[in-house]
Amino acid sequence: MTGGGVEDLLRPLAPQVLGALVRRYGNFATAEDAVQEALFAAYTQWPRDGVPDDPRAWLITVAARRLTDLLRSEQARRHREDTLAGWTPADHWLAPAADRPQTAHDDTLILLFMCCHPSLSPASQIALTLRAVGGLTTAEIARAFLVPEATMTRRISRAKQVIKDSGLPFGLPPEPEHTRRLDAVLHVLYLIFNEGYTSTSGPRLHRVELSTEAIRLARVLHRLAPADAEVTGLLALMLLTDARRPARTGADGELIPMHEQDRSRWKADYISEGLALITDALTRGPAGQYQIQAAIAAVHDEAPTADATDWPQLVALYEVLRSSSDNPVVALNHAVAVAMRDGPSDGLRLLEQLAHDRRIANDHRLHAATAHLLEMTGQYESARDSYHAAAQRTTNLQQQRYLYTKAARLTDD
View 1 (cartoon, helix red, strand yellow):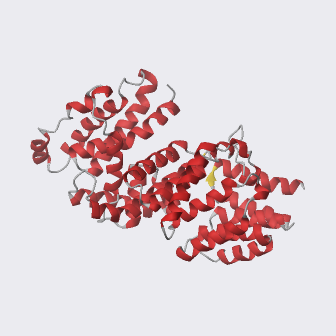
View 2 (cartoon, rainbow, N blue to C red):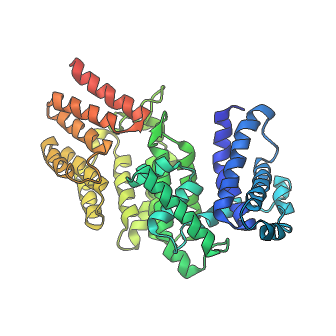
């Protein structure tokens, strides 16, 4: 098996192994360090020696041994050694997969709720979960929050310490606390999905393993809370968005914008399921942000062609979303929808206002949208400059290629 194949296998196993260690041993931060070392060992050994019959049990065994070593090296060595005397991996973790209790999914979900403990700030809840469950790097999480990487490193470190100091038992929270943590959990899954659908950095547009994992966890939540309209809305949003993924890239992985996509390649089963979910959710009363975003995705997915898109409806939906969210990305998407409904000049006026918002002024999406609308108005030189500015501000290689290609074509013209 190649290194890339091993990486694909390890990603969904990582949170399961971490959950197993935290369940058995506690000490979240040290357990994560041990899991990371076990993953590295697998990444270096499995391509050479072959994948073990039970990869999860192998990882748990290696991580547990490393965890023991790490705990023994701390200052309170004598006390910890006494405690560790009875800490050996339970037999059922090492049993054949067919005989082992099927708790892998539960452990991942419990780990998700654990990271969203109320003793953490909302930002720390999300950051820690993206690191521990989603497997994102600190740099990727920092970009998602639009903060410097050093700031995010400190935030994650503090969050791990809070979890350690809390003595939090490993298990699903009781119902009242479960409800309070749900908003943070939903936002975490939303960010994980977005990172999978459009990677912040690297050579690929998609990180399919992340979006797939986010959808899987959203399905688990939906089974646990089928009457929660926002849980339903988030799952619908993911499905309706991911339905377009097969048509978003060409043979060489290059980005294909929505208006140029072959819609026959969109996943009809995801669209059908997503439409049924959002239709059901919207009948339950006032709509939350995930339901509205799912409704927006549904409008796009239901249009047989790009020209048939119902832009007036999209403008109205974005205005509802803006009324409840001071999010500059929502304002950006609203401006583009206005441009498509009323003309690019109207959209550009709205984008000019966003250029003064420090939260998005240097984001590649603002410059890319501005370039597109400038191109529509025939201002090719300014559009070319904006495409270059957008390309310089994204660290995803496929986005860079697309934006530089757009600028080059304007130069050729």
